[in-house]
Image 1 (cartoon, rainbow, N blue to C red):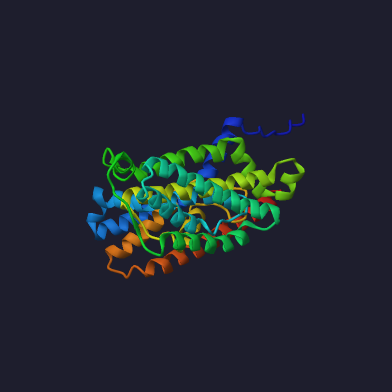
Image 2 (image 1 turned 135 degrees about the vertical axis):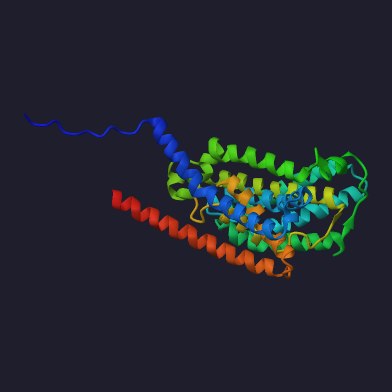
Length: 339
């Protein structure tokens, strides 16, 4: 009697879903989360005061501004796009908001008008890219200086201080149940835009464009409109960061955000967003922003000159990109062998 051939039952849908979930989490957020935990442990062992509530909230508050902009950058990187003007938009938004308040405009209205301005700036970046068929990185390399120049002109090159009375400053500039409002805003934005990125049509279109823009166009995906929406979203988040900075500091410096695009891009890349497009992680970008802030705070705790923070950030970017490339090449090699 001939033995019946052995058949291998395909894994059930729930099993495949669990496997995909583990792969996604382990491949994206766990690395940066593990690095963050290790770094916090090392600093706190040598300097226990680092774990005090005030110190932790201070680090998280400082990371909120970079974190908000990094969330938007996840969407752009996933499309193989980049906004180099985001730091300038951050600074211009803060100065515009402060000037409006100083000139008698209600603070809440000033904040709303600032977000409209940020949205227009983002839409302008995308429109130039669409009309002239240019990569976003080229367009924003120019607008970076344009927006910074406007910032310096309207502020006269001097800080803009505002009176800090009123509900605007009490709510956005203070804390909710002991937690700085900027942290609450970062968490809410992270959760909402994580859901949008993972489980909405817009998020799916963003990833599809980044995976293969030509195929997306052939499939009827409105690539230009998706680019417009992604750039606008990124600028609005920079505007939110600018408004929060005015609410907290009560002033806006025209140099605010200078060079900040480096930290923003680093946070997104360190968090697990692929430079090659098609995939990214909003939660990872938030963790990446916190990691960079912890690195800078750690340098201060160890008495290292703060200027070393830029050098360390650059090294971390190189390491993250190298690791990303290595892992993707190994995954590609493994997939080919299995095929």
